[in-house]
Amino acid sequence: MANIISNVQERFKTTTNAMCLLAFKALSGAVLGLTLALIFEEIIQYGVLSFVLVTVVVTACTLKIAKSWSWTHILIFDLICVLIGLLLRMYILIAPGA
Image (cartoon, rainbow, N blue to C red; front, side, top):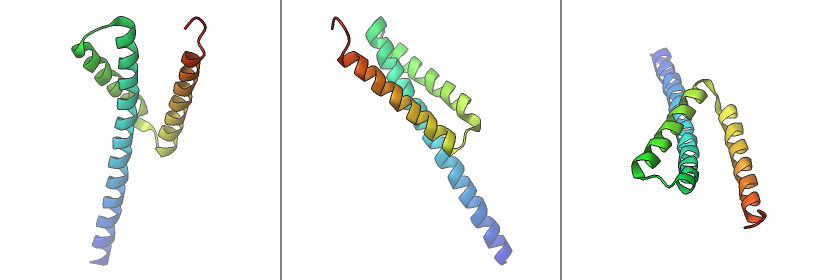
C-alpha cells in the first residue's frame, strides 16, 4: 500500500512540474508574440485579425521550438529576450533624429 501511495505522489509531482513548465513556456511565447505583434502593428498598421494571428503564430512557434527545453533553458531564453528588449528600448531613447 505504501508503494502505491509513493508511486502516486511521484507521478503527481512529475505531472505538476511538467504542467508548470508548459504554462511557463506558453507565457514566454505569448509575451514574445504580443511584443512582436505590437512592433509589426506600428510598422505595417494592420488590423486586429492580423494582430491576433501574429501573436498566435509566434506563440505556437515558440512552444514548438521550446518543446524539449528544461527550466534552465527557458529561463536563459527569457533572460536573453529581456536583455534584447532593454537594448531596443535604449536605442529608441537615444535614437538619432528622433
